[in-house]
Length: 321
Image (cartoon, rainbow, N blue to C red):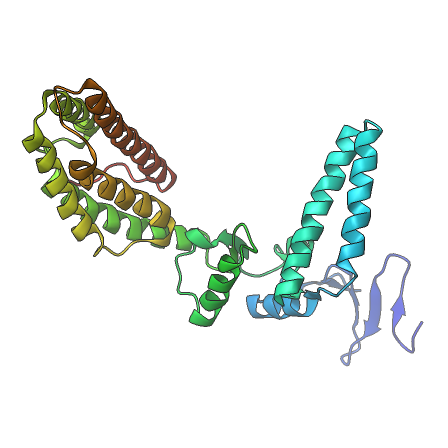
């Protein structure tokens, strides 16, 4: 009993009101008067995103100089000893810790000392009003401050990290929908460029794979027959496509594919200078055919990666002009 307020063994709080009626409130914020009237009370348990991010900043740790050299040497000895004793699984676990420690030492030496533990993020990520998530940088479809990008460039130059993620609280699906729009725009522009420079008419996207395969065979046949005009034609179209694709805005999620596509196009364009079309020299013709097979394989790889992107973002087809 605290004055006129009492708490029973079940956690119910009883107190008199100014009107003379007594009330009791449970720990789950449901209330009843002693006369039987029920009062519902809403208790908000989830934090706003801005509070979440402030909490994450407070939870950040700082790497300290814990004599990394001695710790690394000690762990190396433990790995070696475990291997000598035949404790393969244990040595593998120790080796993983060694890799983490070495990377941590590299990061510390570079001057990056503030970090956030993944465990802390996992603990609090579902306690916000809006979903908070980690998205790989390559899939993040929002502007990033230039100051952050400048730091990333320096980290990349020193090969400090294998990848990057962005912590954000966009509504579910919002980022992916934005990415889908950007990808569809890119694919539409790319399809136009491809159709404009393809050595064959693109009429039905469903037949594209068969057309590419058939045209690859035709190009290889041109090499064997010494048809330099045919090869030059391919090279000219490839160069025209390269010049046009360099002007296309590329979604971050497609950066790697776009780079590979340009590399393949440049390689194809250079074939007119690198291959030897000589029907009297089978060895040189064979080498030329091998180069063209590399192009064909690269084209098939690109097609496979594009197909995976279309599936991931639920894009059913590309509109060719």
